[in-house]
Image 1 (cartoon, helix red, strand yellow):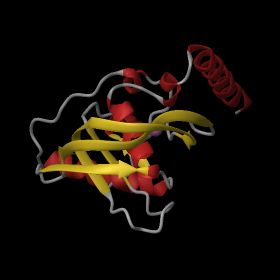
Image 2: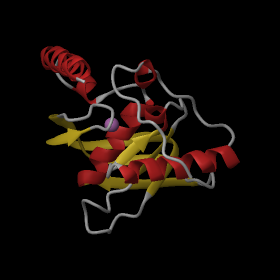
Image 3: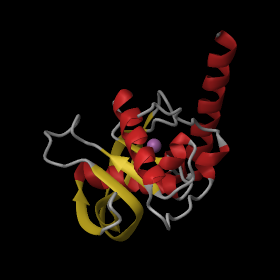
Image 4: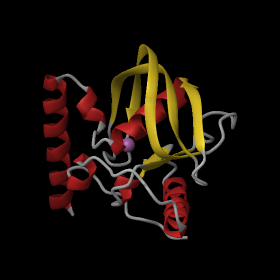
Length: 173
Ligand code: CO
């Protein structure tokens, strides 16, 4: 296994829609293992393949550090949200926008379909933190970041502040 570099905004790959996987092979299995290791090394709750520079429709979610292990580790290939229910506002962060938390409005419940790591079809319902994580990761696969869910004014403010802060970080070094 290997630790992968996590791409940070404004890396262009994060804004591109990922490609569906048509062939799940050994390189997919290695990528999944590397993504899990990378996510766990930074105590992240989820990671999408394009966040490590691979534009494929694949993501991993592990909420065991937040919730008491009731939700198993999730590996999803070609996931799609089939249905949503309700809306809820909550704080979230993103490994590609380090140091930022923001309140984002999302569906309260989602119904998701996809493939597991063996390529078998899976479908399930997610609520609470799981619903939020699924929407956040599937947004990544669509080329969307947290701020794309904000109002235009908040989005511009957030992006300007973020870009100013990372520029400052670079010049401080
Ligand atoms: Co993210």
